[in-house]
Image 1 (cartoon, rainbow, N blue to C red):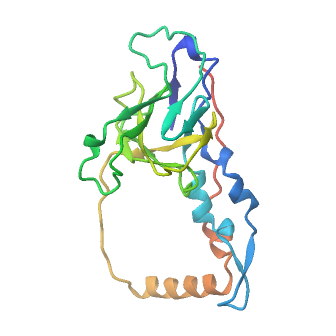
Image 2: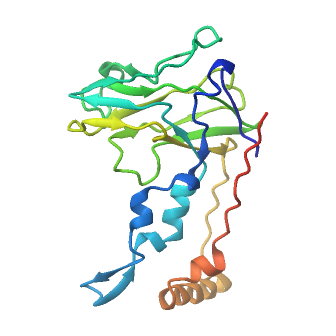
Image 3: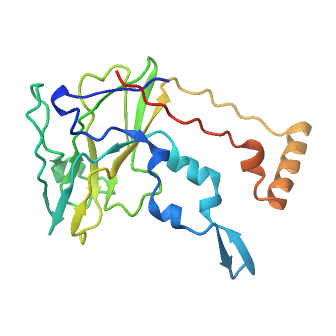
Length: 239
């Protein structure tokens, strides 16, 4: 799977490139202890830091990054980003724009305020038959916004950038959202609909279930050692 990113040539030296999600795992995950005491169990138990599905979800795909520092004070957003004039007509210069509150009317996540829209400075092209799934960075509840999830057919729509709307969830946030903050976690998904097949356990499946369940209960590292597939590292290519 090749993912091709393109940007305006006048901005190429001013934009942070999208990066593999695994390369910018949050500090709180790195600092989290591997084990913690459980009063219920009466012993040390593993934290989610040692849960491969939890960490793999946070490491999956790539991140779109905030292109410059954005200061937030009393609900007012400001930035000082001295970039050149884009050479492409109709190209944005500001890192943010907005959706009016009425566009979210009736949505349970609407807070009655305008939604922040993170403007895109990279176009994204995928291979035929694949779409781009964009969502809030996984398990990143410390971010003061919540990205709205969307799917874009980026094997066809790739001549213009994708913008990423978000609900600002922390009304008390006051400070700087720094350049490089992950704003969207993205990954390609096949557009073909899956065939859903339902079966009951036969003798072989029942035996396998019982064996695997017993091993998992006896040794929490079974999934990581026997079933988890090691993720390959991403090697960026320059055009």
